[in-house]
Structure formats: structure tokens, C-alpha cells
Amino acid sequence: MFEKIEIFDKRYSELSERLYQPSVAGNPEEYQKIMKEIKSIEEIVLTYRKYKEAVQTEKDSLEILEETSDKELKELAQAELNKAKDNIESLSEKLKILLLPKDPNDERNVIVEIRGGAGGEESALFSAVLFRMYSMYAEKKGFKIEIINANETEIGGYKEISFMIEGEGAYSRFKYESGVHRVQRVPETESQGRVHTSTTTVAVLPEAEDVELEIDPNDLKIDTFRSSGAGGQHINKTSSAIRITHLPTGMVVECQDERSQYKNKDKALKVLKSRLLKEKQDKQASEIAENRKMQVGTGDRSERIRTYNYPQGRVTDHRIGLTLYKLEEILNGNLDEVIDALVAADRAEKLKESMEK
Image 1 (spheres, rainbow, N blue to C red):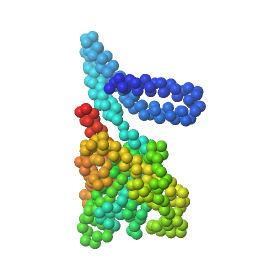
Image 2: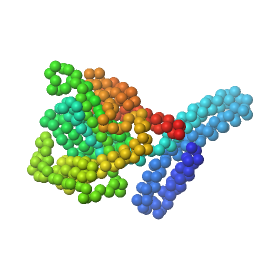
Image 3: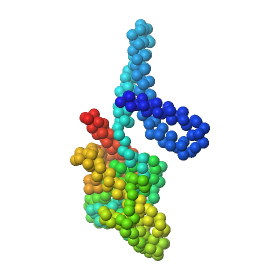
Image 4: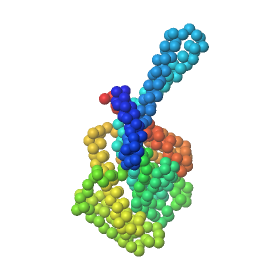
């Protein structure tokens, strides 16, 4: 483990020195490239340096304990030794986690698709609640949101809505949201005050880069149509909405959020590429892992991942058995506690697998 980190440490020092070279400082593109590489290894290197300091402190403290007879000095050395041992243990564990293989998609933008499931109008209303939750969370993380397509209902819900979340590390935070979200509450349309259960499905796709996926234009059927939805001044006036069908797979993507046909086509192609990339990556992952299932879930849209229970003010994530009585907080975009727990469970599972190899 440490041989590998020594290579990172050496590389980090080299890159840090290069930043101050006039040829790099005067070249923004080269500067950004080096900064990106530094950032990718910085946490490992700085953690390793702290680990080495703790090891040296342990060594120095042991020497003092062996060589001195001064009681006060011995007590200080013993305290330093105990602290160093604790640091060595915690930093060693952290380094193991940092050296785990990273998800290559983690730094990407994401496309999120929310669709109403079982429960009709109530499901569509909850889709709007989830969209609001994700929008607020994205804002807290400094990410930018852009709607791609929305199919609204008369009373403010969404039969489906898809949107892009742009920002460094967006996929690393949102990837655990894929699956079925279940809501238990008294619907606004329910006169008897009975609690109903409905579901909404969420799909999270890493944005595909053009270099990764070539699509033959002959494989695409592109149709234009008039936008439809709950109002809007330009709705139904121009045929600016776009529907793209990928003929080999039968995959259909619509975009009607922009007034410009060109912009809608561009957005729809982004979604199509991202869906095809996700399909390709899922196939590769299943071939590698065969039937092995991650502790935090497969990310399958058919898998029930979370329940939002309004009468109890409870949110339960079924993949890791986490229950929080913070429904309102979470629906207001405070998702970090849930996502951090999922990240920790994912890392623990990967660490266990790496130890078993």
C-alpha cells in the first residue's frame, strides 16, 4: 500500500514545483490540467504525510520513554505515544479507503429523470416534491440545475420531469438516488383522511462525453411537435419540441423546455447519449460482478430504496436500514446525512471485498 502512495507523494511534489514554472503559469490550459491532477491525489498524499508524522511521533515517544527517568517527561511522552497510536490507526484506515478504486463517473454532471409510478395523481404530486428536494440540495452544493423536459399535471405534479445537474462531483452525490421512492401520506384529494401509499421512480445518469459514444445519425428518427403542458405563453404556438427515437434500441427522448428547436435537439441528444452510456456501463458492470449485489443497492429503477412517511415524519433508506425522523428537513434539501451514510456503506462494502481478494 505504502509503495503506491510514495509514487503519489513524489508526483505531487513534482507537480507542485511545475506550477511555479513561467511556462506553466502563463498557460491557463496547462495550469488547469496540472491543478486537476494535483487535486486528484492531494487528499491521499496529505493523509499519508500526516500518517508518517504520527509514525515518527510514536518512534520519538518510545525513545524518550526508554531513555529518560524524569517522571513528568515520561507522562508527556506516554500521552504523545497514545495519541500517535490512535492517529496511526485512524489514518491507516482512511488511506485504505482513499486507495479504493474510484467510480470514473463521480466527477461528472448528471441527468435525473423522475417519473410518477403507482398512485396516479398523488404519485405525480410526489414527483414534484422530489424535484424540489433535489433542486434545493443541488443549490446547497453549489450545483446548477437546468430542466430538460417536464410533463406537468393540472394540479402541479409531474407525470415525468428530467433535468441536468451541473457541477464537479454531482454524480458522486446523486448516484445513490436511482430506484423507487415510496411515499405514505394522506393525499390532498382524500376526504376520509386515510393514508395512501404511492411510488415514484428516479433514474440518475452520468452525462456522456461526446468522445465516449458515437451515434450514427442514420440510427436516429427526429420528430418535431408543439409543446404541451400546464400553460406558458409560448406553449402550442411553435413546433419547437423535439422527439428523438434511437432506432436500434427503440429508446425515445423528448425535450420541450426551450423555445428553440436547436436547443431542444441538443438537450435531447445529451439525454439519449447519457442513457445509452448508462446502459453500456451497466452491462459491463454486470458482466464483471455477475450476480453480486452492492450493499447500497443496484441502482435499479425497480428496486424500492426509500420510504417517506408523512404521519410519522420519518424517512427510511431500506438499503442500509437507516431511519431518520427528519422528513421536513430532508424534503427541504438537507440530504447530506442520508447520502453520507450511503457513501460510508458503499466504501465499507468495497473495503470488505478488497480484503477478501
